[in-house]
Length: 529
Image 1 (cartoon, rainbow, N blue to C red):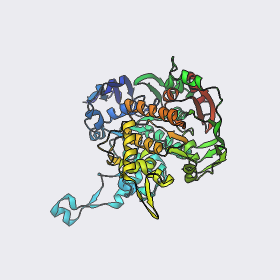
Image 2: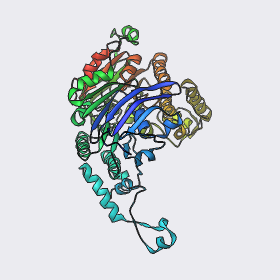
Image 3: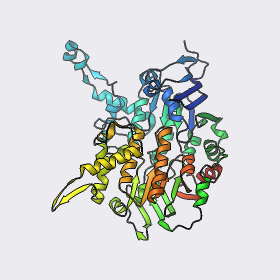
């Protein structure tokens, strides 16, 4: 029997370790019906793991479960699968879409819950011969969309939709479930334009007014303050703050997220190279980039030859837009000079021909040929752009399979890529190993300059250390200038020589990596829009 006076949700003493590595320690918080909780923390703080526990995700059970208790209305619950969580009224919208591209919005919203029409065949042979009641489907999907207060055509096929509409379709799918009591939104505005993000915040307010509780995970701290009743901040697997939103500000949340750092592990490295004597290898002037959710308004930046420059800042402030704009993946304007020569914008091939390379944050969408072998993934760009790994006699050209195998094996060994062989398909690798293949592909180009964006997103601690060490080694041994874009400040401080912070689509300041976390935290919120 449920206890109506108890909070909707209580998380008590939640602990979790992955193979001896403690990722959550003694997590406690409560959530009332109709309350919006903002969950903040840098990447790697433990937010997603905590939500996976709450949602009964398989990965938790497969890695030894968790410690502590989850209570709904005062009753202890243990979800073995997400279906158990859904049955209890908990919905979750993940960072990566789980929609069927060839289906319409309505079909996705009501997937596996479609209303059906009676017909004589189904009467005789059973439900499997029932036909879908499309008019009823449209009405039900339309009601769920209306709950959000946005305009989406229920008949539109997912593959034809802009990315913002896909996000709203995911949310509508959860809202269409009558028993929904709690909705977890993991970075829902990361892919949205400012106007779409505002519409989503309105939707969250509307859900709360209907008594639905929301756990809202976002790096855009002004959104937390605009919509949340309380703020829970996590750092290194602990809850470090749990306060009413009215007692928080963007600056205070940023400071809680970053924390007070007493040591500066990268200090010596930064001091050694902070003389400014190296020549400027890339000069960026008045750069604007039209990247949804990561708009760059006006960036001026000089990058020194041979350095590792970090670019950091809160999500949505434009840091990801800089490499994507320079490398021609999104519309951009302004001027970029590399080695004294102008690089045309909106031209990916010109950048590659000038010996620039880019490891994208979107490894599955941009970075990899998922159905091809590791050999093909590592060698193909160098083959296509630089005619490497090819043999030629007269007009006949063919692949040098021996050279392709050798270069792939070299990086499998150097980056400790876990695979069955160099011929295994990229799709079959874990996220961390896929990330390493993206790095190997860039290294095989032997560029003079490398942009690497969110190189450790979604990978475990051991793999992170290896990826960062390989970037430092590539920079040191090959003399390649590296620009690393990351949401994790500590990672930048341990890897880079200088760190530029982006806020409000502009460079708020550049500091040596040895500066305190608080100095960087203040820059992060200086121009937040």
